[in-house]
Image 1: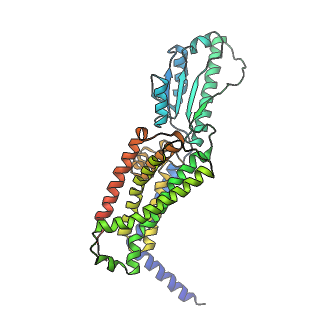
Image 2: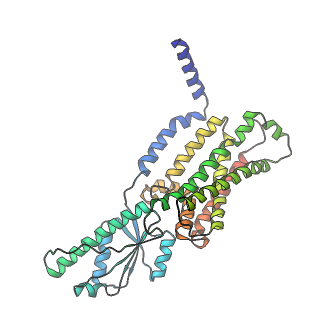
Image 3: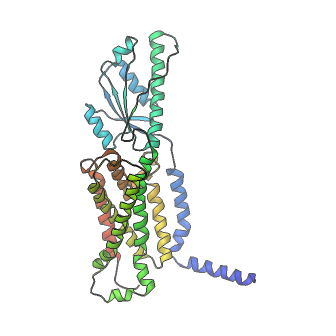
Length: 373
């Protein structure tokens, strides 16, 4: 064994690796970007709980309870609905995380020494976050209870624990599988479609069959559509397979419409296939295409709200998530699976997917040229 030959082989590999100008930014910038993403996004702390409050009592005691929630700056009253039906709509649309309803007899029951009920409605779509929000809610109520007893009787009294009967909607048992499995369906579709289409054009060039496609009368847009249809069918087929496992193996509830879900999947694939084709047109080799694809996959995953709430991210990062198609598809697929909502609630996500998908796919088609260089 000659260490000299090994040394020269290593030197050759480094020269070849850094010779490609398109690979150098990925090798250098990818670890830094991933570090920033993990550092800011991986955060289970609850910093912002959006609350819809119905105060039917409108008394000093109800205002004190409202102040008890907002004093710590974790709870933020964003909506003041006038009726329970409006509160339900806010939870369905995902605009609030908790609903608090203070009954009309709240103050009178407290002043008479009776138990006063406060209704708490929690969105259990994100099971891990819902359990923490419920725990925070119980702490606030417990502190408020102690302060009221101190005010009424002038001294600290021991009392029983709060009878917490918090109603968690859409995921009553807070099962983690009900939250994660629909997200996995979305992630699998993105992963397969990106990986397969990112090497679609490169395979033709490396196999030497691109010359045959160039001399055909196919227009660039026709060639692109012809190459994406098989991957679309494969992705849809894999989605059906994964959904079957989710429904019958993991017993995940599907409360919404299947056609609405597949329509959203088609819009989502428009974005992922467009990104994959764009990568394929700008890459020189399959290895480079694969590296670029994985460079996209991690930010899409981390900035989608799949695991970490977008509300916990820095403001600049939250703005970046609006460019992530997975963010919108996750809202749609979880809304259809757990809440049973449709286009009347989820239409903003459908519009965002259509705009992103159309722009990305049009850019990929415009970038593609029927030539070898």
